[in-house]
Image (cartoon, rainbow, N blue to C red; front, side, top):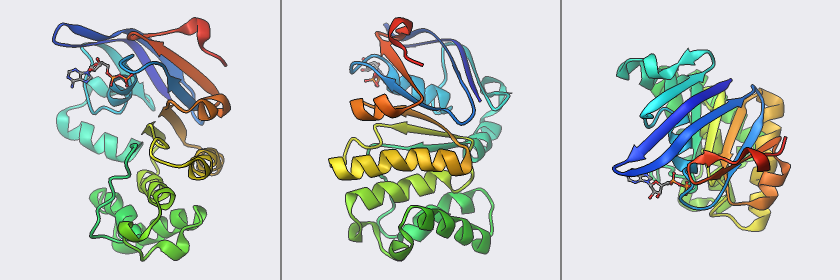
Amino acid sequence: MIDVKGITKSFGKLQVLKGIDLHINKGEVVSIVGPSGAGKTTLLQIIGTLDKPDSGTVVIDGVDVGKLSTNKLADFRNEHIGFVFQFHQLLPEFTALENVMIPAFINGKGRREAKQRAMELLDFMGLADRAGHKPNELSGGEKQRVAVARALVNHPAVILADEPSGSLDSKNKAELHQLFFDLRDKFGQTFVIVTHDEHLASITDRTIHMVDGQLDNENTME
Ligand code: ADP
């Protein structure tokens, strides 16, 4: 599903990624761990086509994303990749349901189809009775689950999450982590999750350790 080869990236004189090779299978839930500054977020941004590498290739679902024009790349990202960040980034003036529907509208879906898909996801997450609430009427855990529903609304093959449970308490953390596996089992998505959370890393299918811009394969557990 994701094939990364020979990725390097520098910011000025600082080489942040020093030749990353990584293969992730469809339906895998993979965590990326490592010290701050190791390059985890930069790698995730490059896999997510939000940033470009200096060299190397990223192939997602058989498409070499480096070969896509800027316009095509935006469409590809919309259709194939969902993002979840540490802070939910929901739009405060819209309800939970509307927040989940927005990426479907951007992707050209009609109102009825967008609403049906958004409700299906909110329902799956136990949030059907929160659909009409605005973000400030939801708990932290609920907001983050709405953000996950939003990431999933266009059926992306890949979900990329950067510290998704970093702002949650332990109960909500556990619920969110379980949700990733439930979603993978129901919809077959591939998850790549950057995390400092040792428990989450311990339950993912594979943990990738990054140190100083490289994968630490010695410590990478299958
Ligand atoms: P991690 O996610 O493992 O903490 P990051 O990928 O966020 O690591 O950052 C790796 C290094 O790259 C850090 O030293 C960070 O300061 C630097 N860095 C990240 N993004 C930029 C940027 N846009 N411009 C300059 N330096 C950056």
